[in-house]
Length: 344
Image (tube, rainbow, N blue to C red; front, side, top):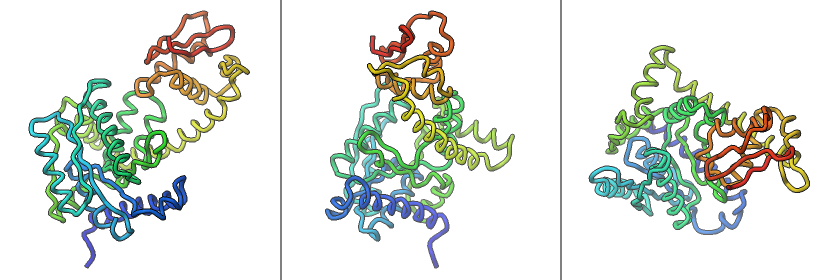
């Protein structure tokens, strides 16, 4: 008899992602060099919760069959009493799954962008450092379809446009490591991951922050989504996840269009020409403007739709208004038919 359906589902999701990792190593920029060297290492980011423990167990089962080394990282955010002991416990659980190497990394969480954003920034910085140091080919994250639905709703509430509605990518990463982070469970619901842990007798830790109404995502999870399902019926989570994928496809196409259009709206000195910007479709023009503002030094995470709308008015609603102040001490100003964007 085969494994429980929940266990089979999580293993299949991980197996597919590991095949993708191997394909990228063979045919990507590292190519044959990566394939000819030591067995590649794939890490799982594990908090000890049901989603990441299910992911860790599936990675431990599938990786050896494909000649991949499987390791794990847990991040101690230091936000709760005894967090170091809990991190040590997660390390013990991953070691019991025969993951190697396994590490606990302590981080200091700042305040920029609020507690949730600050914790996320600290977490990804630590994961990047660990992956670089250990030479990992990929880091697996346990975000589920339910997490994706919540992310789409949060983006909708911010009113930040189609990119926010696209949610989390199955594959992501920063400059030079665009394929580092993999999310195998974006088509797997949270209950399946929890069931997989239960039938495998895997101990899990439920983070109290996940039920703390002080956190926006927690309120959405326990109040917002249930209310939507009560009003609209079952299937809201699946529909939101589909919306994320459709929005991502559209956003990627518009971003590519904007990247191509940008060269055509600059003069010989590289300055943006307002008349040529005006001729672009609004969705493309605003993307060109956003790219230019970020390139001038404005932090992408602090740049919202309202900022770009103000800059856009220098093109579409010019009435002699002054410079627009943007995050990162960046200014946008119209001068002689050109849009000048620079740090003040």
